[in-house]
Length: 378
Image: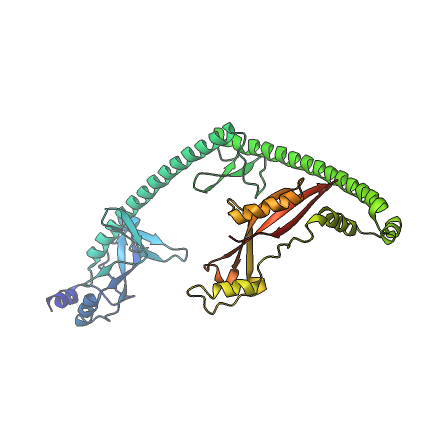
C-alpha cells in the first residue's frame, strides 16, 4: 500500500497525456514519448494507484535540450526516450541487446526513466565498441587466413580454384582448410591475396586447353580404333562370315554388333560348356533376407537391387581351382575373381548377399572381349 500511495502522489498523468513539470521557458525542451513495461507486481501497484494496470505503459515527458542524446526520433518525427532496444550486462559482463523496453516492479518516476535511458545510452556505446573490436579482430583473422591460403596456392602449382563459378582474372574462389569458401577479388584484396585471381585464371585456362587437347587425341584414337575394328570385321566376314553376312556387309547394312558377337563366340568357344555368371535375382535376395533376424517379412523387387562389383581380395581353394581350370582352357586370357555384393535399396541396413564370378578377358585383333563364368561362393 505504501508503494501505491507514493505512486499516487507523483506528478504523472495517464498514458498519452502524462506530463512532467515544464522547464523554464528560456530552456529549450522536447516532448518525448516513453514506453516501458510493468511486471505483475507493477501492474498491481498501478491499479492500486488508480492506473490502468496494463503491461505496456506509455507516457510523455519533457527532455531538456542538454539531454537530447537520450532521445531518438524515427522517420515519422516521433521522438522517444532511448529505452528500446535495451542493453544489459550478462554473467560474463558482456553487453547484450534485448528488443524490449525495461520492465519495472513499480511504476517509475521520470527521474527513474532518465537514469535508465542514461544507463542504456552508456551500455549502447559500450556494445558498439565491443562489436567494433570483435569485427576488427575477425577482419584481422580473416586477413591472416586469406594471406596463408593465398601463399599456399601461389606456391603450389597443383592447386586449383573452384570451377563453379568459373575463375576470372578479377575474382575466384578457393577452398580453405575445413571446407570454407574464400572469395579473392583484385578490387578488395591486397598483397599476395590480390595475385590469386589472375593466377587461378591462368591455371584454369591452361587446364581447359589441356582437356581439349586430350579430348581431341581421344577422339582421334577412338576413330583410329573404330577404323581398325571395321577393317578387322571386314576381313573376318570375308574369311569366316556366312554368305548372308557377306552379302549384307557388301550392301553396307550389316551392323558391327553382329560380327563382334560372332567373334566373341568364337573366342570363347572352348568355354561353351562352362556355366556363365548370371547374378543374384530379387527372389534369391528376398529368401536370404527372410532368414535374417528382423527381416522375416522383407519384400524385395528387382528395381530395388543394388550391386557393387569389386575384384576379390582373396580366394578359397575351390575358387582358385576354378580360376586355374578356366586359365588352362584359355591360356592367353586374363582371369580375375570378382565379388558381386547385392543388397536392397529399401533395406539398406540389412545384410547383403555376395556371389562370385570369374571374368575371362581375351584380346582378338582390336577387340577386348570379356565374359564371366560362375565361381564357387566358398
